[in-house]
Length: 124
Image (cartoon, rainbow, N blue to C red):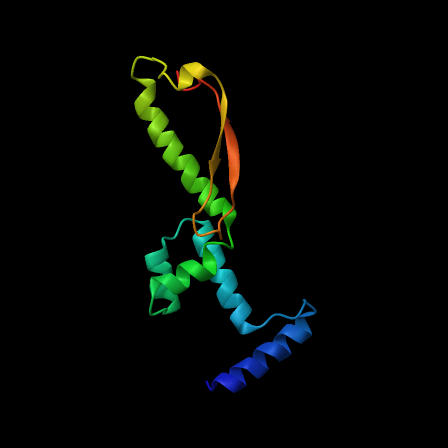
């Protein structure tokens, strides 16, 4: 089907549905966003979208879903904590100084930034 014909048909069906106007390209972005949300890796998403470079895919979609970054951080923390729970607990000299605020975020400036309080012995 010719792209223009498909676009006209889609607009007609969208109008008849009574739903808010949406374009075909909007559906592409939605599908990519949902795919990332359920855990699709960027390389697979790049192939699905036909992007020549993974940089385009990453720049376009990773900032859309901060919760994807949050999930990845939680999974990484869970893995690290799993390994430390079986080890005997001993505070490092830095931990013995007491709670402190640590910052996190992307050095590129396009990811969500934040901070957290680290409590000594919390991992024990």
